[in-house]
Image 1 (cartoon, rainbow, N blue to C red):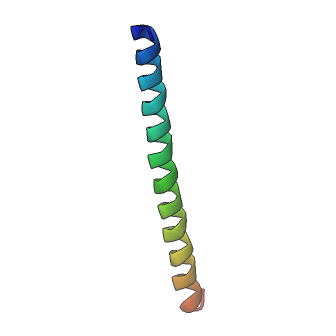
Image 2 (cartoon, helix red, strand yellow):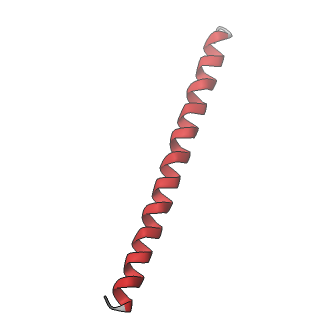
Length: 45
């Protein structure tokens, strides 16, 4: 494998890892929002 292929592979892996981390953060934020809605509903809003 040439160095160019190795660099491209590493860049692609880095992009995928960033996307996966952001997806995890997105899920955490969505869960937090759901909790806030539940809290507001529990207080009669």
